[in-house]
Image 1: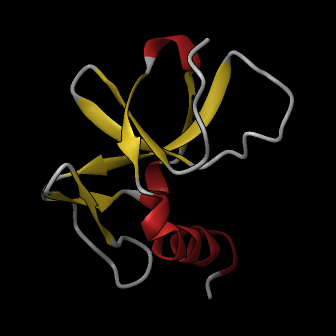
Image 2: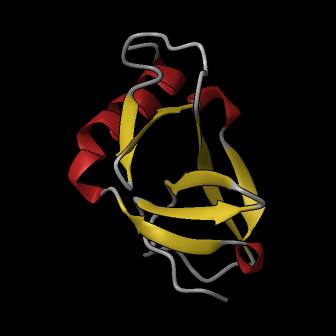
Length: 96
């Protein structure tokens, strides 16, 4: 299994996604991610724009899912944008 950390960007079949699961959890074949999409309808705070490899993509927070870790290829880290990502998850789960 590829070593992925929280806020890493990974790619599968041309779709980039942010790992939002803590690396402190026990190993599992799946990991929780949120897709990064171009032209996704954005709602303030729920869908922030995230800069990945000089490209602005929208965090499609409502599409949060678990993906097989073995199918992902690490691209880079967006840990510097963690506040926007955590806020989006908070808005999704708590509405605030």
